[in-house]
Image (cartoon, rainbow, N blue to C red; front, top):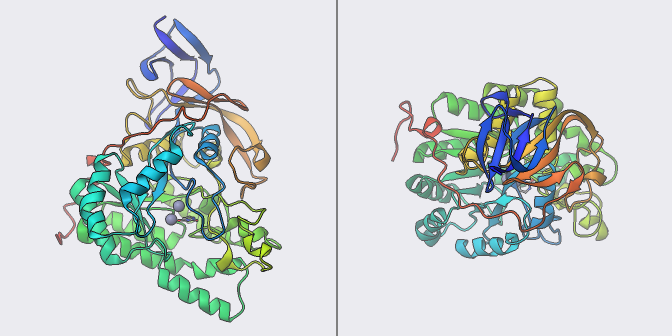
Length: 482
Ligand code: DUC
Ligand code: ZN
Ligand code: ZN
């Protein structure tokens, strides 16, 4: 037998091409792509299906520490299982440094949580919440060498945010080492001032969350993040861009020649501010940071996706259960009514990211399938240093695939999903196109309703630097400050 596995008769789509071919796999790698292959221990007939690179989910919060009494609903086992059932073969959650904690110690803590528990391959972005001189000059460079080549900083949330000067320091190390900084861009002082004013007016229902986190709050911070990146002359990626006004800042920076990357998420393309108006505590299901915006905002984000402003679309899966006293309604159990300040921000969505995007991009014809693959797999693999091992179908790449039935219509019901949460904000949404089989390094881990993988089959990915010369070459147009 020449191959461990042959995938026959499928239509391969990568970020650049769509064509009919068979794929031969040996030792977990793609070793042949040809019109017709024979001689394998296992043959999968992919007639009528698309064969795509496995999804790369590069923004998700798994097993993060509790916020007060509110606990993450996913472990590495449940989060990776859900990701696998949604067509993903790689995910990159965060390793969250607590204030006062060594960054390298935080990495070890998360490695222990993940080891032996993940269904799919994984790396970690680091959340830098304590940018001490030792972290900046010793721990970060060490972590980058160890394969943690991207990190996130927050411009809001008192327990994790760092100030502009500290962000400049982090960017300086990123520039020196060639790493990528992801920035959560919302202005903390504005959020807290607006929140207090709303509270004084008695405006505390979930819908007022969107007012405290208004467009200007995100737009200002986005512009400031871009300025910090310009000063240090190093690329950044603005995560979870929700507001068209923030997106316009990114577009402006890109047109100026700055190396600004951007991500948006399904919640900003499917959910709306009006969802907060649902009765009782229901509105809390949609609270995330930044929040979903008014419906007219969605079209502007779609146009920006078409125009290439966004590199990636990720779920920002951040699961807090709806029921119980350790989730969205913990305050109800203490006798409270829905108050936007007392609801943990985050929505689950790791399993439905790819179907939601396939539905709008491919089934509804907004983009071609190659752009879908680029935005949900290939670009993340490039940005985060795992390409071409991940994110494409090519000789020598890992044999990671999602087989898609482009005709299958599915109504999203949380009861059919596989995460550790207890609701989906997309409940009742009907999508066309579904990942019917997920293959990790040649092994089927999800097969049309059946989980065939196991925790521990996913391995740690030591990531390379993100540098892609086509994207990150210094711009001739930009003034150099340092
Ligand atoms: N946004 C969320 O909604 N939750 C966790 C962190 C974040 O940035
Ligand atoms: Zn964030
Ligand atoms: Zn997030």
